[in-house]
Length: 622
Image 1 (cartoon, helix red, strand yellow):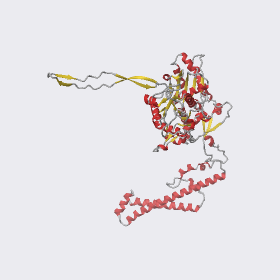
Image 2 (tube, helix red, strand yellow):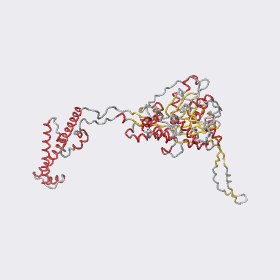
Image 3 (cartoon, rainbow, N blue to C red):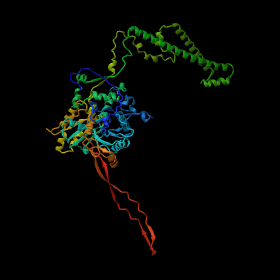
Image 4 (cartoon, rainbow, N blue to C red):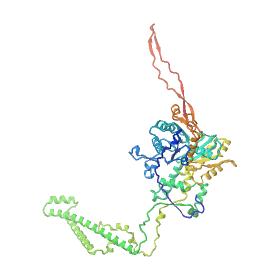
């Protein structure tokens, strides 16, 4: 939110940042010996972040790759022609060709995911032709479906042949990282409010473990806010539809939006003209400074008018010539028909009259006389125009010409002719081209982030984030509620709006009992702390067989791709026993046999006893 001392007129411009291709790094030897260093991949639906979990120089402590989680592939293009992440200089021309591996916040398109992983390994200097010798730590969605984890494990273990894999939730990694920075002793208890690009989550953590039964998801986040802002501005400025792109709306959200502590009270402030002038952000669109009708002198206007009149004369002369030629051709044709009558060829004459839609020779003669007069008049007018040589015949131009000339239809193209009676000294209001190409972003600055708390603004029939938080807290005892409310943690790229922490504190104050204690903490780097937390965890828990949180190739082969080793930042893994009935075997028909004594005996196959088989099926509660 702008400060009170901000200038009255705040004009900004779009940065329109173009992505630069990532460098291909060389793999340092220290990441191979004595043991391969883990690769940390924060697989986000908006942005992918990748780097090393190893001690080293300062630049290694931050993600070396940050790029959009999209792939651009033209129709009919080969796999090698697909562009990934920062290799796409501008997303807007190719937005209809963009593909992502995500459906909301869950990975479902593993072909694109494989391309993303190829891009990461190539730019980190890892040769993935034979196998990837480094352990992989990757983030996944809260309560990730078993099928998605199974497909991801199959991709990593079968395609890349990695030795170890670990999965964790991005919001919990950020929670883990910030608790270490705040010197809080584990196990940690708190509630995480995470809002990303497609979804927002409420993640309760009890004694260092995620309570998956009480997690909630709200299908409103950054992408919905950007689309809402785009619709608002396109309705407000229908003349600039092409300039109001989704990428620019994301930039407006990141740079100019804020969260109102009291939404309705803040909207009332915007009713004041002084407040509006002080707080509105004017976004200047690119435009050309050449004006179609600028300030011109009297001589220039007269010269322009003379040119317009000359152009009209040329058009009229050309039309008269065309009409004269048409009339002359029609007259010649009628004269040829009349000659048939004079030569005594009555059959051909009557046949030609029928083709001309005439009844008698008198009607033919009448048409010939009219055309002769019209042709003569047209020739006289052309001779008069040729003798004028540059003289402007205003009287002739103001009168309607012959049939088909249609000069009156062209008078609207030259509005200065109608203003001849007005005085040349009348001052016309100047047209401000720069202001016409400005977007006035006012209440949109707070209306778009508000959808996180009121999804009904965009037509979503679901609870807001704080209403869902109240529902989650109500599922615990009063002691647990007190422990959770004392450590409310905000993380995710969609939580970076100014005023977000104050808004959550105000909502909790209204929600919690009188004089109850609560504390709200914002992540140090809401968009990056998930990667930093994953790196910290990987450095404190080295990959090894049977180690906490790491899945080995043997575990994958023995327990299946959906298997998960739990740790402090992972999803919950609950094996459940599901009874599966065995299908009944068809009853065999009875067979009649002859006994030695001659008696018939009926032997039937015994019916299989009904039984059930108990199978262990692993699944994650949601």
